[in-house]
Length: 380
Image (cartoon, helix red, strand yellow):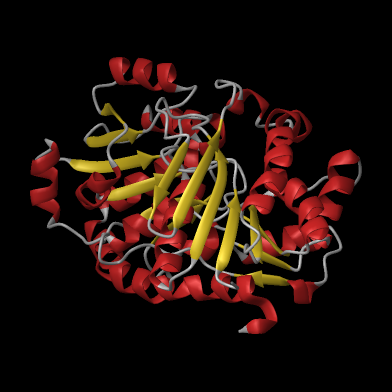
């Protein structure tokens, strides 16, 4: 009975994003250990596909709720409106699942919105409540959002934070330090294997090119506009590949029309990520917001590709000078660092040779055990 878990999250596959990938990896590990899992989520918020309303697999049942699409990015900077948009339906459906599946032992809420429902219903149904801080929220010093967040996090039996930066963020809410456990995300090292670089470039159609790639949602917070401004000033012999979808897609396409060394690659199936990570000489992450972890960085490092990442959030915990470079996310810094590594191939090669071993030591599947122990609490 203790290995019966309910995960509540606003995002889940087939939606594309770091949270969704993390949950897939986590569930894969849990199923290996014979856990029974229920997932309560929404239909994709920003990916133009629909999942099954109820999806059943071995030891896993996923319930996807209807959602008014197209509002997620518009409300991203207003947490109160975002909660009004996504919170009520989770709150109404959670007790139904707890009645239908009384054997659920632990509820894991992914973030603040899912945490509101869980904080309330876990007490009513006497369930263990674990909340995951998947990002750095930069909680305000006062106001309704701060007060609500304090209640949500202080109600939890355990808080699991994706990074030390995230832990510090949660501590500003007055949460007991002993209640917060830091974990590190992981990637499947058997899946993210490096291809021979020149062969990978040939397979994706860019033979003999020096490639710098961006993977992510095409939104301002990911540094897309910073990157476009930087590319205009970078060495024109560098080919920039941009992968993803989002509100800034027209800006990316316009830049690709104006500059021959910018190529918009749209999105690619997850199974092709190792090939495209391997084809890149560098991966760029000029993120402006407080990144919770940086799965793109970890995946690229597993594939032997150095990463230039911003100094925001937890990215400095993922990337360092051994395997890339941490920079201030400005066009000038992107240009300076990219051009330097392009012209100093020996420096780039040294970093590339360290990447996979570095990733294996830090981002392997063993990291899942921290989360699993938090689910079981004192019963471990």
